[in-house]
Image (tube, rainbow, N blue to C red; front, top):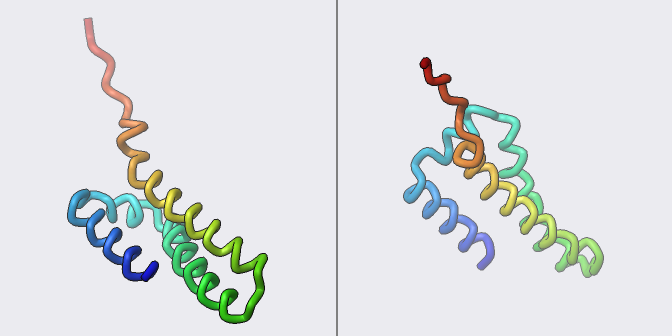
Length: 89
């Protein structure tokens, strides 16, 4: 269920904000966020099956962290616009 909602939210974000993938391709290091989401979702499934409660608790925490980091990265260009040329007087 979580993986389905994650994929739906990814597609919806790309449809609504078509410039979103551009931030990731401009700075390839930020693909760590995507890999973090996938790793934390895998951890949720794996550690719940192996009955490791602490790791099973930390995996959704990491999932939320990486999802919020991805959302913040999408809005960085809006928060910090490029500097404007000074007005000549």
